[in-house]
Image 1: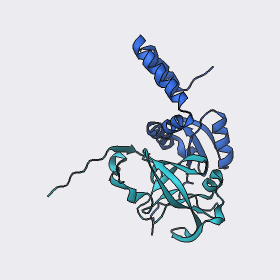
Image 2: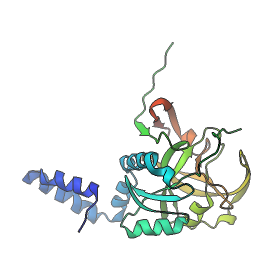
Image 3: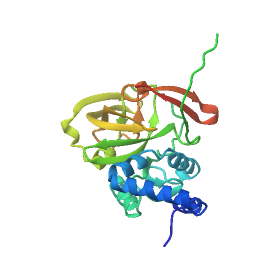
Image 4: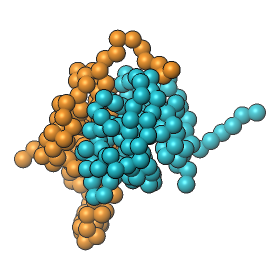
Length: 115
Length: 134
């Protein structure tokens, strides 16, 4: 089974916890599970660092996909294509509930201004 | 005289992407999507692409129809109330969705987004500083 870079990082941090900290973490996770999906949704709605990693990826690779929708999870490209529904479905199939959906604008012949 | 402000949020946007991109969660009914959108101080309203409306299941033509004058020509769009969330700050807002696929930019304009934040821009280091306004 493969895990994402984020999960791998979290697992490494968990491995460094002492017994008391592990018990506290377990209690927190159980509390979240008991409160249903709302807590999980809240945490997924605040993934700004993930988004910055995605934007950094777009900065470096976005121009390889002109006119296409990209679905990213941090710096991981999950899917790309011209059909947003298909791109989103592929990203969800990869297990990401809220991928960042980004439309790469076609390369302009001239610099852009708003007149 | 000098002025100082306190901004709790710093956002680093892509330097080479066209425009200042921000991630926003849009929720309509029970559907939520996270899309990137360009900060546009020259836009009066928030306008998203036709594709995004379809993805959220929005019955587009039941909304408030408005025509926008853009650098690429006139764009027809429909306004719908959604929840829009960025940087942990969420509010309900009427935003517009392009009537046809021709409009290829998600824009965060003054009404319903820019006015909800105090904003400082340091473009030389691709940094946007924000203070949510309640």
